[in-house]
Length: 313
Image 1 (cartoon, rainbow, N blue to C red):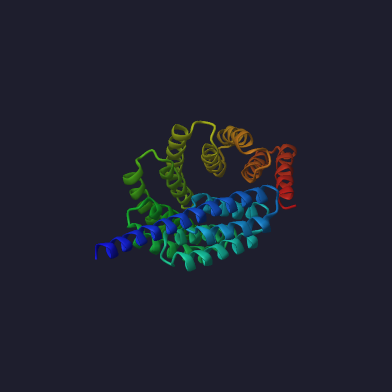
Image 2 (image 1 turned 90 degrees about the horizontal axis):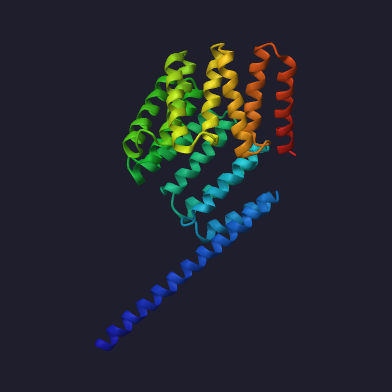
């Protein structure tokens, strides 16, 4: 009897080590695919990069955070190149693999639904994006609990869609809930709080609540400068948001130095041909036209166009 029990224990241990070894092998293989996918993406062999990422998903669908980041990066690159359909195809294939391997209620599925919603937002498919974010929110609330920071992030995404659809009261409630979760879970000076403040400020601008919007943009900027330092791309985004508000108000003298500083940060930290640089150049050009400097405005606009043209080549 003791011998039989010993054999059972030894057999269980062998099975455990075999399973553990197999999991480790799959994880290593997933990493290999991710590395090859990233290399292919850097060399603009995007179809090959996709196949590497999908292979990585099949090997270790829920244990490789670098994989999710890589897939999102490739989707963003497609968007920057003016290829939203390619980005959509990538995320939909990824979503199908995740739902099959992890189950439809897994938080990773919610993350991908959110990513796909962002792609739809960029295509101005706001209702479709809102449905995806709502689906993601239901998954996260059940899997993570209603006070989780990821829930707050999805509330933010949903708020952006509702703002775009003109449902300002709904959006404001979503942002208020997100902000309450973030301030409690992350603290008053976390960059996620700053992101929510910026979104709420944009909502207030749409409602012509300009003084409130300025206060929120200023608070967000202070948080980001303290958290990231003065030369971070997120600081540049807040500077641009504030400059956009001042431009709407006709405060051109206040807006121009903010655009100048934002552009300098982006060119240094992201490179002179990044999509964010192009967006800031366009905004700056619009300001210069409003200030009756058409020749300078054309230089900024032409440079932004050249950046986008190169990305789409």
